[in-house]
Amino acid sequence: MWAMIKNVVFDLGNVLARFNLNDVLNSLTEDQKMKDDIFQFYFQSGLWHEYDHGLHSQKEMIEMGQERYPEYKEIIVQFMHTWSEFVLPIPSSMEVLEEYSQRKDCYILSNIPEDCFTFIKEKTPILKMVKGGVYSYQEKRIKPDLELYRILLNKYRLKASECLFIDDRIENVEAALHLGFQAIHLRDVSKLKEEIEVKLHEM
Image 1: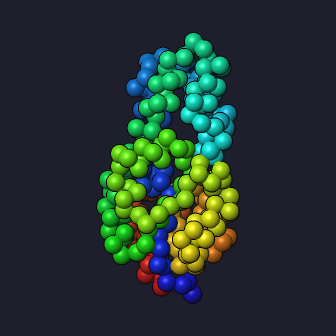
Image 2: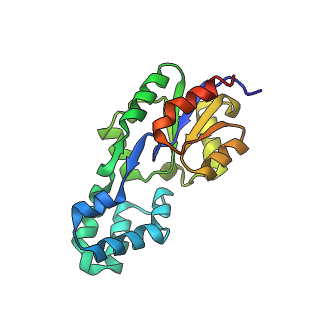
Image 3: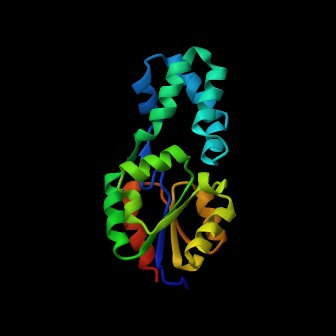
């Protein structure tokens, strides 16, 4: 029998907020080769994973891109300076977060680079609606690293069995389950509230 859920731990991407890379690239250029090159360099190479990890600064990301593609110098600057503005709160998820923040202690556990964290903190209501969070760039660790989950538990003195963790990536959910969290693999963000309610009523 599960312990009572006292805390709800949300991922950000595809749970509370949505990011569409194509929207960013389309806002910068109509040149398909340029868009493909930027996508491949930053995202298919694993470099963005390292950025989430806090291993590179925004300045370093710009410099690496410009070194590889000097002909895209200005576009790369624009891309790195504006991409986080396309990380948009999901309205239905904001309603869910607002509701549950009044019923449970809510936290965030997210893989996120510093510039995106800053944007979310300053330009969205998300962080004002939670008690706290742990972010990959700050800890130099990235989900599904078990230590990142332990940092959250230790920082806020939480018991894993009393936490419901919600993420769209199965490997992150499996890591949480391994540590004794209750968890939801969220495949359809429109069903966020429904899936939380199912877990709460399993008590």
